[in-house]
Length: 329
Ligand code: 0CG
Ligand code: SF4
Image 1: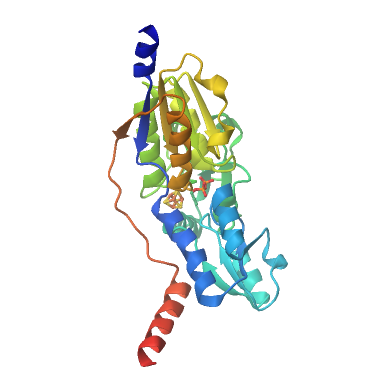
Image 2: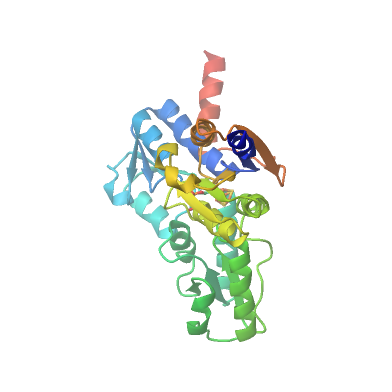
């Protein structure tokens, strides 16, 4: 009977919302539609979203992922990833006579526009974000002369500005909300006249996934976050889970990366996934857990999401033209 009790105590808390955000859904569908509309290959600059499985699946369908537009043969179609690109990348593509489809998430474009506007007003812009991340490279490219990267609270001490009365902070969309607020607090201590962005730069999806994982992290012995190692928002979910009190938390691409040893002494497992993660991968993890006695799944729901974005305009234009020619036929 003692065994029975242990078995019964095993449960899974499944976070909601988790997985695909509106920007990722749109970007992935854009690659699929482009493949249908124009045929393979479709070149994609940078991983369309930071997920191994998504990238491999699209590769099988005929997408070719490249690091720079220079690798794309002249006259081909190139798509820009959801993380956004610097204006210079648009220029390079035009020079190489590439047809472009821009799958930059509208919420990243919003931050680009804020950067352009504050640079025009000659502000020093303190961009909170992770050095080397694709989104940060793109946003910085909008106003390289005006932007200084601030990579976390520890980085504040070394930040210098031209005029402390004309400083604004902006951020990457996929940061830890709590850590960003800590960075902002330190910046405000250093620059009391620091201006805040007109609206949240950390996107709704990042925020909602962190709220959900926080809620379940407090109760979970182990939190499994499904997502790739280069996915900023997915990595933050591991940190937030640990910060919320989870004893242990790991990021995995697939169920087969879970180590049996992580289950030692564990009765409650939290499961969530990053904004670039297809649900089928979460299902794989739930299946793996159920085979080990974690069959009881309870949803921990912290928000309702209904936002969607229309496809990139270049693609909508061609899909419309196609539809009307079919009608004429
Ligand atoms: O979280 P980051 O910005 O690294 O990107 P990912 O592709 O994982 O998900 C959101 C987007 C785009
Ligand atoms: Fe857009 Fe946020 Fe999704 Fe990034 S994580 S693609 S900013 S909705």
